[in-house]
Image (cartoon, rainbow, N blue to C red):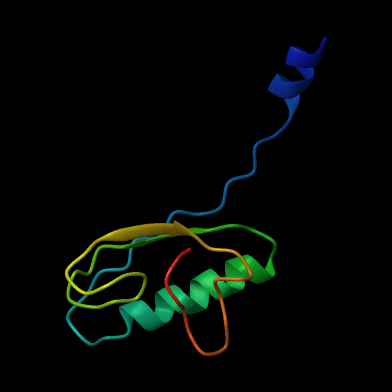
Length: 82
């Protein structure tokens, strides 16, 4: 029975991380490092940018969420999601 096989498979989920702290303490830099590491491990992390004063994923003044893959993680930094 296929439904029994699906129920028996172990779901592997990565950790959920929330970065909080004072301004200019490296939260965005750490988020980029952790995201790049997860992509190198073959995962597709969901990066949620709740800092409306910066533009890590979108234009300033907005909130954004984007699944990140190898095309979204570059040596130059993150671009906008497409």
